[in-house]
Image 1 (spheres, rainbow, N blue to C red):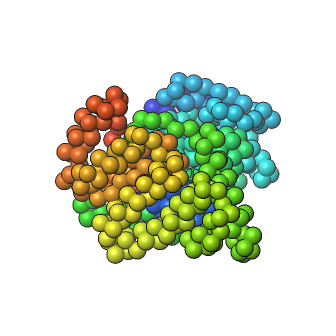
Image 2 (cartoon, rainbow, N blue to C red):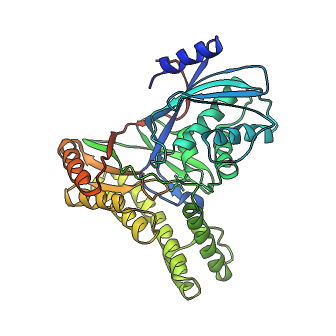
Image 3 (cartoon, helix red, strand yellow):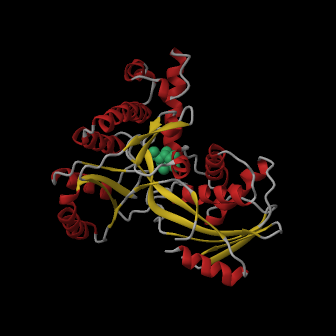
Length: 383
Ligand code: GLA
């Protein structure tokens, strides 16, 4: 996957030179399913990207070619509609500019990606963030980066039917190399926390179980949290989201809340506490406690929030049994990737062991990605 390949296809199709952009996927260290509850999250962009080659074409037609899918699609700005194809995400982004009364005309675009789709690494957010950033740049719309994140989020809500939080697109746009971002999803503001590795690595294991966020399970979790908030608010009127709720407030209202909703809310409130603790761990360089928090998050996701799957649970158990510092499923859930925090001298043996046992157990081979924490979306020189 190279800029040379997208540029070559672009120039052969459109006979001109494009502008190049790069949009990364993300991991999330801590704070899962807290973003749409007004909480904190700790994501970072990673060195897996969408690469775009793009130029305005002076019409109202958008021509997109997905190099690795070998698919092309064209639409005009008056043909934007929701759906389940990758082009609907792009239509949603164009729609976001139009609704903000930004003058964008047609464009020719070739793109490629090495972010695995539906693997919990936010490929759709990277696609939307990258396109938004590129349109803002080539048509000089002057939108702030936060507007681009909101446009990307609206595209997922309105055009793909997934009521996602702001984390993924925000991380794709605002991340900084070598840092974990602490993002406050209530105020949409962030700061950077240095990630000192000291021999530690972040390794992703792709379960190869494909989740689809558009599926109702994600939206259901969000509704359960809203239901919990509604009930707690009867007693505590200042409560706007689970961010304003403590464990004791939640327990106070337990009799009124159905058990499933209670477990979902309890997970979120505890995860918000863990996220604060994880910030301290990064500050004091305490990787042991950080790893323990990751395990706690995983089992909360699995047993209370019920968004895990056998493969993720198996991998996390295996990591725990093999002395790995921390491991947990990341992203929306129901499969995708498990993020491991581990010392690099354990990596080779651990990967070999996982591979053979996982294949024997699940009859499919997982993928492994050692990831670096990178900068957010940018214009690229093509190197
Ligand atoms: C998906 C969503 C995010 C977030 C995570 C869970 O990645 O896009 O907004 O809710 O799930 O933390």
